[in-house]
Length: 108
Image (cartoon, rainbow, N blue to C red; front, side, top):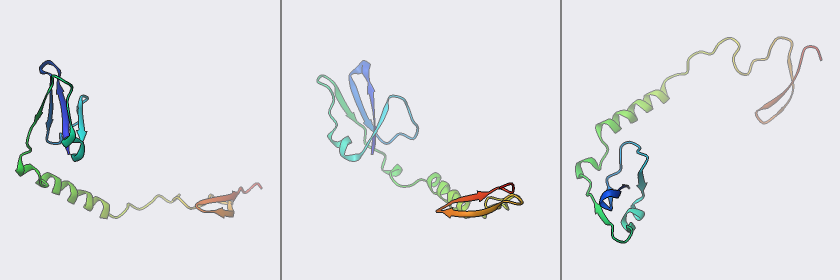
């Protein structure tokens, strides 16, 4: 993966390491497309080599992953008395199709 940006004033296409934030005129390319990239006639393609130390996961990546796992494992808070799935007083279920239920009101 690589990020492509253009320097129009210098007629240069710059292909560098994957950007860490979004910019309106930057384009992320897969490995196959970044290798085949060509620029318009008269333009130069500048390919910046990635820093080998930044290729692997960083401690920030690992901490974010650990936080996501902790959040997913956290028990759900107790629901309010009128929880999803309970029917109002006097209402009864008369049919079911998949996750949908047919309810009859107390008046009918």
